[in-house]
Amino acid sequence: MIAEERKMRERAFHDRRFGVADGSRPVLETAYRLMLPANRRYHQAMEAVRPLGRVLDYGCGNGDNALVFARRGLDITGIDISRSGVEHARAEAARVGLDTEFQVMDAEDLDFPDNTFAAVSGKGILHHLNLDRALSEIGRVLTPAGRAVFIEPLGHNPFINWYRRRTPEARTPDERPLRATDLDRVRTYFQDVKFTYFNLTTLCALPFGDGETFDTVFSLCGRLDGWLLGAFPWLGRYSWVVFMDMRGPVKPSGRP
Image (spheres, rainbow, N blue to C red):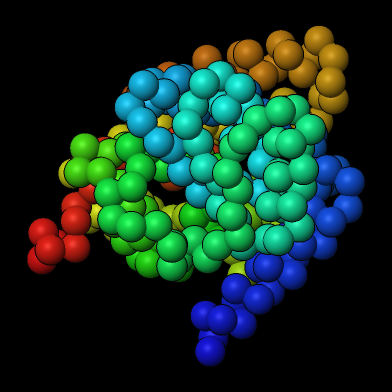
């Protein structure tokens, strides 16, 4: 019952979000400018999985990401709990002449058979879910050599957490940014896991708006992040987001 209530709240929040215009969240748009390096890494990974076969966009929202990759030739299917999001995605696919498939579906209980996808991808979805159920389902629908790539927010930085508390309207009541213990659990579901952290000190660029000063501070802090995270890997948990590259799902029969 508790899980179903959580899903109902998530569905209602995102139905409201995607039922209005394009579903963007203005309160977060400034912060999302910091995501360029992480998004670049994500797009590189998606290009790498293109020749492998069918891809699942796990938590596709309004379909924007899936349609970008479909235009590039990926065989991609999108699922989301929000009917409004999926309806928007289908309408946009029809408008631009793509036959990309979008389905309303529970990410913790996928309707696909085992070993359906060569890759599963998502942005900002796992922290909305029961992580063990989500990872188990992702591993189940992936082929044995499959790859999963995700960008997720982290929950250790006190300044970011302060900002989250100040902007509750921008997120659902049940979402929970990932913590180090969650990342440790990820390793039990995949044989090969790599985490790359983004936005440690680059957050300092936010107060400088959109101009040249922002670009300068962002660039300098980006270089500082590279040095800090290289010298002190444990600082990664205090970054804003993590890029997760997971390969070789551990199938249920092989888990202790």
